Length: 208
Image 1 (cartoon, rainbow, N blue to C red):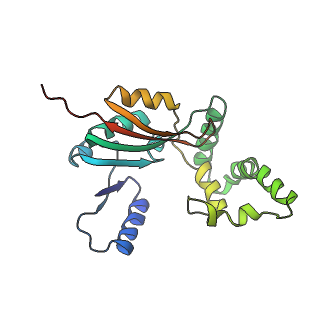
Image 2: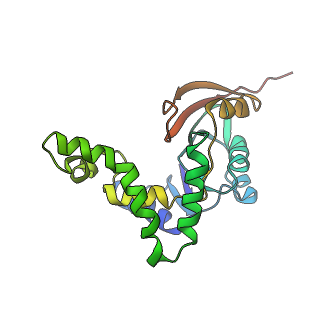
Image 3: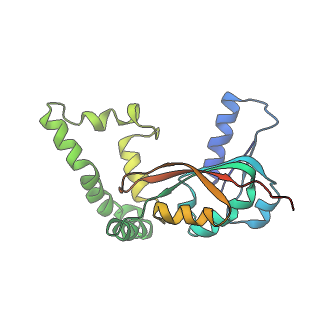
């Protein structure tokens, strides 16, 4: 198994997980690398399963990243990816917010974090208050969320997540269909601002 990431802190996190749960496993290689580095990818070989959840849309070159993972999948191998859903109005707005946030000095980022917090959590907070459980969802978010972080860090993660690219489900389907992949499973976010999740299978090689 091969795990790699462009961010050294993410690599360190993966290495720590390996140390805790699979110490000394020689078949699990953890290293720093970029999905945009074709030379690095070409040296990896091919795999039965290639998995990238919520990453390729943060590279700044999403379609180049998607193109680069194609050769990594063996014939009849599986590709698991998730990509932010494109929204006609929301996507341009959030792109501006995220870009502006990352260009602001750290001391001024609250100017974008606070309205984003109100937008994201205002309705849920009002519901909790009406139920007689003020801030219940906020306080228990880390316990119930699959993301493994507090509500506050989740807001920072969302607002600060730039580069930021999106695609409609049909665009991702066509992209991989044209590259000889069949769609095995699709889970959409229902037109919202989350990720659409795809499982593709690569067509087998055809001998002539």
